Length: 299
Image 1 (spheres, rainbow, N blue to C red):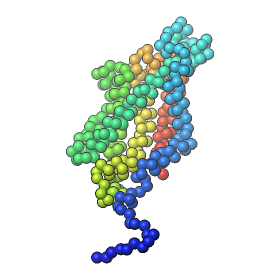
Image 2 (tube, rainbow, N blue to C red):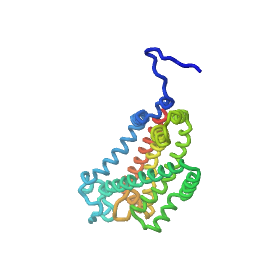
Image 3 (cartoon, rainbow, N blue to C red):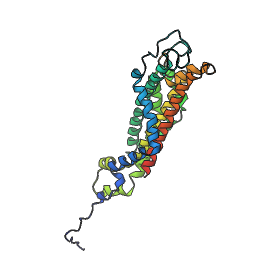
Image 4 (cartoon, rainbow, N blue to C red):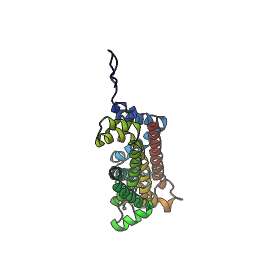
């Protein structure tokens, strides 16, 4: 048996938990996300999404028209009277409907994606605790993934009827397996890495190991998935409202305005241009943010 002596100025040997890599530190992880968002790609995506978010939130300040109020000025083009973007087929102000439609979509996305994130990640954590729980949760995810989005939307609409609550429910159900499977897979990978083993040897319990070491690394793909899921939610809301199982008229939504504009595309093309540009910009911006976060997380 040998003993070691420390000379003055010699640093004490590190405990196994202390050798965990810097990537496991939450502050370093946040810095990686920030570097990704501050890249040209990330800044452009943030600018697109931020501009649309600001327009939706400031809708009452940007227009004085009620989005459901009907006038005699039907199908007017941009710049007609006090209607900057014209009117629809029953005289409602198109700019007002577009801005409030953005607000409707933002409310749906802001409710549905966090719900899907919360439920999916909770199920993923349950799945990593026991083999039987893992099998049960995986089969539930497979069941949810077996329904195409619009088929699921039609099924839920048949039960609940069309409306915002239906869209939120459909988007939440679709996002649960996306978040759950991603977090479960990442946890299974990272809990067997060297830094996790070192933390266990150093005396870290299961809860500390999960919260302080595994989750900060396993959360990387989940953070990226949030932006992707938001873009999917925008597309799904537009599709459901377009086929008439989404937001109920006369309340405005981006997909609903596109559906109303379809018979008038030839004579009044600007009718559909507003929601089409907004949906495209939102999806492109959110995907750019997701790509920037993904690149930052890999550095």
